[in-house]
Length: 452
Ligand code: SF4
Image (spheres, protein in one colour):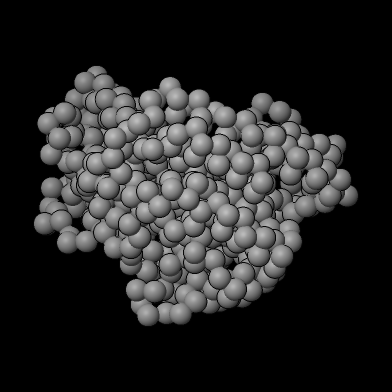
């Protein structure tokens, strides 16, 4: 495994590769495995598709807007190919796995296709010596070459693939199959390697991180993994994302009291109204979710909680939506994301009449975000005056002496950031993790200065 050395060449010059990674953090890890394979085979990695002999688009096929983005990206790189016919285009990932035949017809200019089973064989695929696709979704290990591409001193670590839940709206189990965990030992080795490369924040990802280990017969798999990871020297903190509400138990909360584990929970509740939750084939309605939050906050008073919700699910009338609004007001989440329901072929929800029109879905999405902006403003205001640990990410573009970082309560890419000023005479932060005195706040971000 290596940290990014974009543009760096391996031994033999085999050509230049650019990779466009769409979708989620899980997809990004697979993209990094593909980059590692190319680097190992002597290809040079370049940032821009314009500059590459070979362009890989790692697609997301989770919901309608993600598929539209994937198609727009393919159209864009195929336009480059029209100007430069020697350029080769490869489409990979979830959307290809889901709908390859139709995509092949729609994009005949794409040179090679691969779904989610053979990321590690990508070089063979582009060089025309791939065998038959594997039977199941690829899951990397600590021995897979991987070129970590995230900026600053943080990295995702994917701990499993697939999902064994059957939420009514979700196509993930159809695309990726049932849940498969990596071995805890492989994850520990990978995190040790990352720590040796200077990574300070580890973000554990999967489709359901709290299910970790069950397919291997492990009890309290995630809690025990966190305890092992928290002992690795050099890592400042570890966070896990995508927890399933019913799987947040005492053993997990106890593990989260350890100093190296972020008191941060990402629990997608999806909805609060009991009828909606049932129709979504999920188990926890708003009343139970509020009790769970109370239990979590009693054990971890400084915890930050993120959730994601779906608006416009079939049958969501004004009453059901009002229940969701009340829930968002009462739950006081630190961070929240909302999706408009998108009917996905093959899922139970797709057979229900899509009763909420697109404009109404968007209006409801905006309404929830408006409530959350108010909640988040209040949550952030309480952090003013405190001194917090911040993981440095990058200089603020176009501003001298101003840097961007994140606290333990902010996950990368989805939550807010901390902007902080350096004292005169210092051109960069003195360490990867620094202390920042928070001086002001806005709806989602904080601002401050390097603590003396
Ligand atoms: S737990 Fe998440 S990934 Fe699994 S089926 Fe439900 S929504 Fe999809």
